[in-house]
Image 1 (cartoon, rainbow, N blue to C red):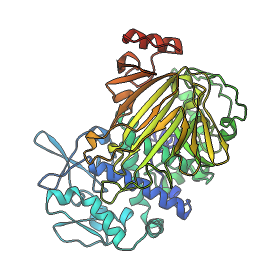
Image 2 (tube, rainbow, N blue to C red; image 1 turned 120 degrees about the vertical axis):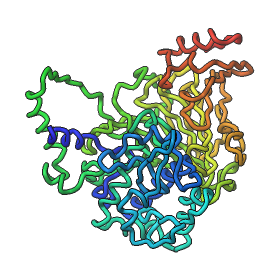
Image 3 (spheres, helix red, strand yellow; image 1 turned 90 degrees about the vertical axis):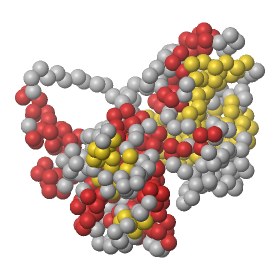
Length: 511
């Protein structure tokens, strides 16, 4: 049974992180990008867990996220980038200092004063300390480490080279396996913070790098019991097949895979201006991982089955993404209100997972450059849905065809909207994130717009209502009238969607 459990573990690859064995196979540039996205993620985690007067971290929503994490070691929370343990104080669960629980913290080469906290060397480099005498200092420990790392002159490329050393493997896997557990446990796998990280890590998995299939936290010695890393998948399949007869009441279901899409770009960019009807209502593949590919000023999105290896993987089209770039007249000059932050940006995605009718919508984001949880987000469903979205390059213009058949022109260099069925305005950088207005991108075509806004959750799960507009008509519809608890559309056609809207609105809309 122990071997069966281990074999099943090998089948479940981490979706939010890479193992050290996989990390060292990346190029220098890819290693830097990998560290950058995880540093931002852990900064978001730290901002969600303020410290108290005794130097411990209150676990709010993250308690549910990581309650099951790392059962063997007991690590179930992050303290300023270090895996640590929760303790109970009265009725509260607190994340205790790694100095009390993490042997790697104590054995770190960094030497700090008693009122200081060691910065995580895997993220910031060695011999850096953060002040930790007051709650304010402990709250800013992660940001302090970022600032000191920059001031030290050590680059992420140098840090990546340091942690590529074989003797850093155990600490690396310990750190990033807990990241994976955080985003795998409970409902939070669908939260923006984790879903954004998952999509970015999936891009690394999409690379033809023969990264191997060793899961986070599994040592090379354990992998050696089964065979070489490259042979794990075949070995597991063979072994599980031989074990099938030992399991009672076991049945085998044969699933015919859908048509493989060999090149998402060629399949999505249609040169035929005529409409392409949606081939399905909901996606027919278990494709919960995503990746993106650059294509002439924008990104082409795809989804795939997380459990499939790179060699056997089928990618399915998922739409297009446009991010504000250099020269954007409304965004490029903006300065983030956050210290030690990224640059504000605007994202416009025309999503269409597996070219499914009910999974085709505009996804909008205005980021002020701070934590993901501070971004404002919108989802916009457009009716009628006549055609699968597509894009084409016309000189320095990118022309996107919306589901309604209407077009939007964007500048190929900056991704600024030039004209068509969408318009955009200035971004709101109010220092009070709770008062920021939703993304300033709006539909101005002749169809129906069903828009949901939210500052943290996916809008179809967190918004209280949907705002329906068509020309001068406007109506507010409670979200549960149109979407289920998982955020999916209840209706299965434009006719049903329209009927649900009109049942809730005094103003009657028409296709």
